[in-house]
Image (cartoon, rainbow, N blue to C red; front, side, top):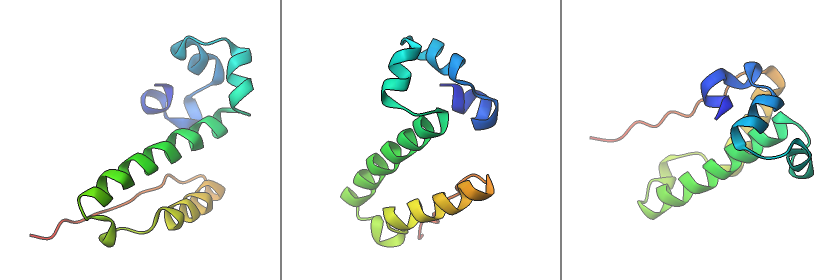
Length: 90
């Protein structure tokens, strides 16, 4: 995917559309812009990971998904990436 390969700032809609093999009109049917797509992808990953973490009992040691979304929105205003650190207990 373009974001992982080129980063958010260096990704563009044309490349994203070409890599996903969809028509540009289809992209705009579902997403307003690349930022909307990025947040949709990250939200999907957060939900999937939280489900896995919850099944293994790890969510007690992590911020809630809503807290992460709040941090994410704040970082997006500052154009900084979200960084979540988790240290396993020995």
